[in-house]
Length: 166
View 1 (cartoon, rainbow, N blue to C red):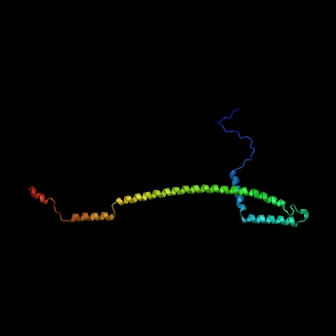
View 2 (view 1 turned 90 degrees about the vertical axis):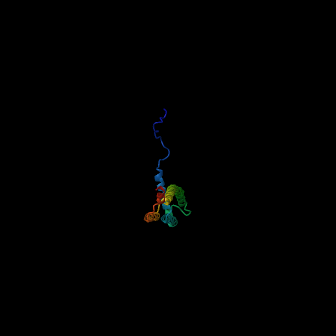
């Protein structure tokens, strides 16, 4: 039977376990955050000290990991083998968040730069426009000049011409 392209495929048998990458990432960040604390170092030191003291000073029949502490070494190696990838995963997620934040910051800075350039052009245009506008002092001086002209005694300019016509 041929598959229809207009319908989604049926989910078949999965060999890999299904997990939520986001939830796993959050868990890895919590673990990495805890591994980087003084509390973890104190807990680990107490655990190793109790382990070593028990296996050195406990009665022979109750010791479960004698002196070279091979089982303790195995447990610490296992813990380290899981801790390293979890820390790397947490760092990768933080790098992704930082990259996205940097992109947002860059686009915001570009918008701010464009706004500043626009406002600079607008201010320059206003300055040019104001250069063409008459100022209050200029208008006052012109009005005073006109007032002085109007107050001068009237001297007809056509007086000499009137003698010619007569």
